[in-house]
Length: 316
Ligand SMILES: NC(=O)c1ccc[n+]([C@@H]2O[C@H](COP(=O)([O-])OP(=O)(O)OC[C@H]3O[C@@H](n4cnc5c(N)ncnc54)[C@H](OP(=O)(O)O)[C@@H]3O)[C@@H](O)[C@H]2O)c1
Image (cartoon, rainbow, N blue to C red; front, side, top):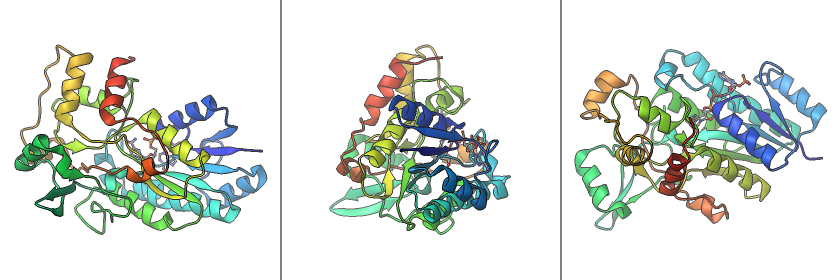
């Protein structure tokens, strides 16, 4: 009989997996560390040998609260909760011969690829004013990082935040293990007001940092991950974002047009000001290419449509 183990079901992303598994009528067990210390290899393996799951979803992990700056002061927890936990779970799945999925992150990249005069180059900082203007004028010159591109915001290619470096370590440690999906999530949002929702965060900032990013609608992300599994797509790494990219200014415009017509949003003047007063550690801002996901037959709506839908159905 089918049985999915969901590790980290109590978290922001894990809750969305639980909702969707339920909606699909999938038999699943939502596991919390309170009930079973799945961070221990022996405990998890023993549990899997008894329960005999047919798939394991690992959406557990340490994320800094309220943001990645918190990981700089909690390096041991960050490493344990990302690089180590990802390996523990993936190796236990291999030992129990169970296929698995791991929620990774797009934050291991910075920037995008820019094609000009027939030449492609990587631009790590899309906030440069001249580049921003170029992209706004002609968005088709920009393309995202593919799954085959090496992370460029990692301990191997600094600077990076400790959180991003740890997520990149997790990926490199488990990417070659058999029968696993690595689903890269990027800046989750949806229609439910929540301190973890990107659309809520933007409304709560004293000043907003303008940059360009790919984003993942939380429900769309979860559906795409489960579709990859249920449709038996090849195992491996997948960028799971809504196709396209947006600037923070564009998102603010959408928020003003829909749910916050009277709010005045202030922006940081430039990167220097943001990093001096608004952030401790470098932020990943990047565009991901979702060709592999779409080629696997997964339908996922464009980011503008997902944003309009979320704001049009905003629930507080
Ligand atoms: N939210 C984002 O912006 C984002 C973006 C990209 C990727 N991700 C990745 O998605 C996964 C889930 O993120 P999330 O935002 O849902 O996080 P979250 O709300 O903090 O939930 C994570 C869950 O993981 C479990 N957990 C296991 N070990 C932990 C540890 N050492 N510290 C804290 N929690 C631990 C906890 O569940 P129990 O204690 O109940 O077992 C917790 O509820 C993480 O791997 C994260 O890196 C998140």
